[in-house]
Image 1 (cartoon, rainbow, N blue to C red):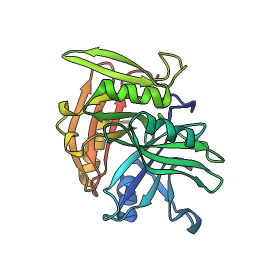
Image 2: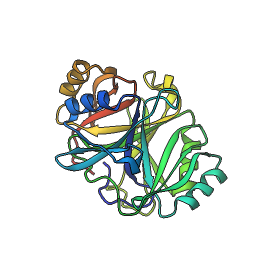
Image 3: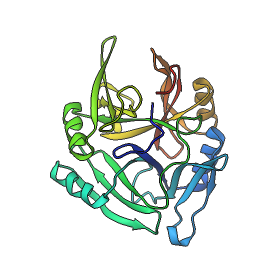
Image 4: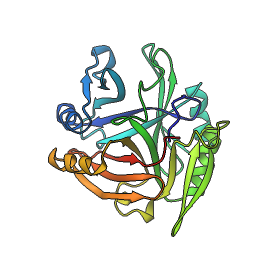
Length: 264
């Protein structure tokens, strides 16, 4: 699963945009035990979700007329401006150009050549998430896309990602890892044909973050109790784990996994 060493092209941040931050916080507190550390005026109200004092995600209020509720995945870059140029050369677009976030780092938002949104984070004093791969923290990310080979080519150009198809009964799954990393240790996500997943297709091309849990079925029950919805019932993936996908009460999509393989 996701490698704890943040390198170029690896996911190093994830955040939630939602119209009602208080309601979202109540939901994720009940599900994962997260607590919101509000941001000050200098951050525009951008806050941090923490688990036992360690940051697991960011969060901000996004009015409904400015964007739909969504989770966003960010990938590490040493130069956000250079990445922006490469994105455009590869056929993507800039949702917003790179900008400094105080002394924390520099960020930019983009869409790939199929329209899926993703972000980049150039670390400053904020080097990334404090914890990953533990219950309640980011462990995996999937891109749902209409053209997996085209997506693989795009992100290879932008970040140098390496891909490999993993066979499973009835098909294959394209895994991705940063350039120059060890094959068996650094897979952090997958590329999935969107037309083969009815629960994800209505959202169009997008990234879906997975958070680790101790018990997938308990997470399903908690999501329903807390007002979210189950978009894919808990299911076992051989040699991987037990997964389920959800929408939170505002509609932001995410997934959980209880791994059955040793992490990595």
